[in-house]
Length: 407
Image 1 (cartoon, rainbow, N blue to C red):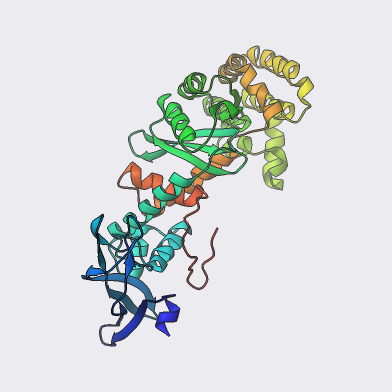
Image 2 (cartoon, one colour):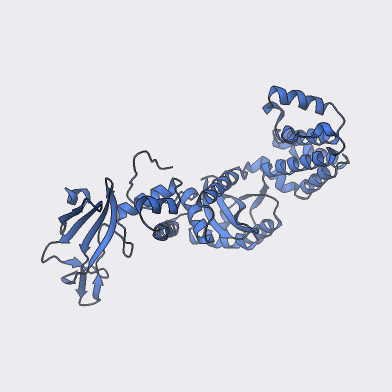
């Protein structure tokens, strides 16, 4: 029964079971038939067994019992290549886990469980869990194909306190992370270009980049992807305006007590306000406060984003003029920023790409970081990002515990 359950084929078979109820442990003893020959791992020529040291692999639990698979792993003696260790069908070289156990570890990690929690659940140190995850992520990324990538979103996210960042590059159309690297300077874009080429991508085919107005990213894209168009994310523009409106409110409320505790009124869209909030909001909007004027300019810009592309440039220029003469310094500052990056702002009306995808991904990354209480290294953070957001093909058997579903 266990021979069939493990999918073993001749000459491999389960020869004995050692069940220790008190220890809650089951050992499956696997062996090969006497006189068996195995292909040389180098040339494939059938060879006799030179020796067979005994080894152990951790397997999926049998109910609540910890299960191990123990077998003699043969070494062949080839006339050409000498003594070589024969790989076993149930585990990869050097792992210590069966493939099914590794598939379970990977499935749990991809569904949000931290390596520490997985280690506690199966009774293993998290260092062994990390080794499994890092191996399969590296292997799957080596096979990844980026040849269809034409639109990329780029953004940074914090890794640790003290302004320590990693930068994410995502395929907008396929909604997956392509590359993660340390830092947030212009060199990250050059590193992405090299990785893109290594995975079959063509930098000349990348027509659009969606980004905030980071000078470092602008410089890096100009150097590494000179033919790509820059699209300055509309959500970033609205975020700049929200911050400007809030800055005006904070400054003005010192002399206008009615503005106190009104922050979220100005951050919401008017249609999202409840009845009580709407009454207070209407009263504030009917006043002559600078915050109300700043809010009206924000709403006007949001309206422009809903207009046809043919009118966008003229409307945006008029908005910048109105914002510049508003005599509200934070709003004037946003207008100058938009004017300096006009082509990239207007590019959205043609490309339609945004960083909304990456904003959502960053939220998942930060949630994973909080759940893990931080990552010990950038390597481990990158591994988790690829697991959760890389849509990689790990080529492992599908094995899930009850109630767990793949994403």
